Length: 197
Length: 270
Image (cartoon, rainbow over all chains, first blue to last red; front, side):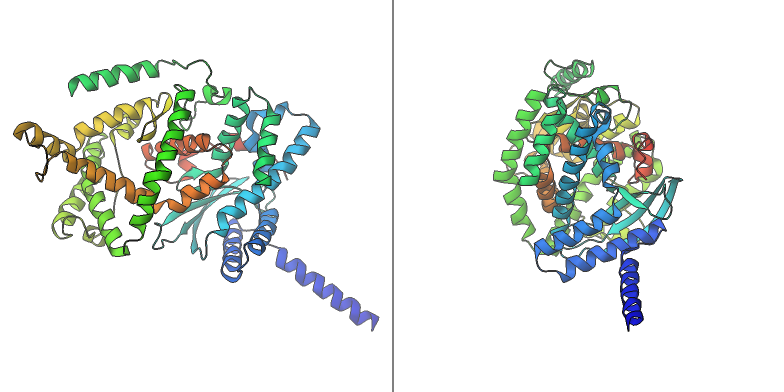
């Protein structure tokens, strides 16, 4: 009886683990994420539930720390370890709020993954197409996938119609810091205000 | 007209001569960067004030008009968008020629001929069905960029929005190169007609205004999302504007061709 119980627990854990594992091929990886996101957006009514589920996906598939460092630009070298720790924590909250807010308004996005281009051993660009609706035209979306660990690809940027979200965010952060005479703590305050909104 | 061009040209040349005003908050990264996706500020304080003014104007006029336009049936919106694009393609055609893109110029000319006739003044797009796909819009600012002229500094114009020194010159060039403007403008000058004549100049502004509303209506959700998720909307719009101009000059939608990868290279997290 005890043995059966262990086998059931083991199987449950294995299946659970399986459902969290994404394909290591960048194209398949993006296709799986797109399908999963679509499933959540189509089958969930509550905005809070959608946000929670989308956040879970982002935590598993996006290199949030990598984006955080990139977004901070040259200022990442000027922060103390404690400030870096605080920044990474704030950025994760900011990223998840911003990411889920952008997506929850889409009721049924139809995205086709079209092709992939290997830039280097560390980066692959996966190209996809968000199909047109009555409200908006077709949109090209490219995903910058970080493949340094080939078994665990991670998304680092979304490039929509040639416009990089990470780059836009980086320039936005730089603007906030430099409007305050290079004081990074003002960026932290702004991020806190955004998170609390 | 010539006086206006000379004045604007001198003004923009002054702007291009690295005359960055005191109080500007341009980052060292941006100043030092050789990336074509960045540009220094001409006069940030004034630009931010102008940006606020434009933003308020958008809330009061452009967004409600765009929402009203969005309420029209899809075939009407699509037909209007097609007709506007068809007229706009004449400016694109001039710029294809100036950039030496003769193949694209041929395609654009063919599209215009077919869509204006078979497509009933551009309302329909039979040319695309015949394999003549739209080549993307071109303007004189892009042509200057294709000729190797740098963007110069960045600023915000009332109503017209974000621009750079180069693109401001481009705006003047557009009126010279755009046959729609030339026909309507010269009709008024030559005939002394101002008012309801079919080819009078105000029709040019109707056409440009309708194009702006059509664009705004197609991007209502994108603007809302950007506004909601920005911590500095002015900086976001500036970044997006410069990235967009760069990719248009390079005639590419691919990040591989338009984005500088060097910033990513040193970041290793796993």
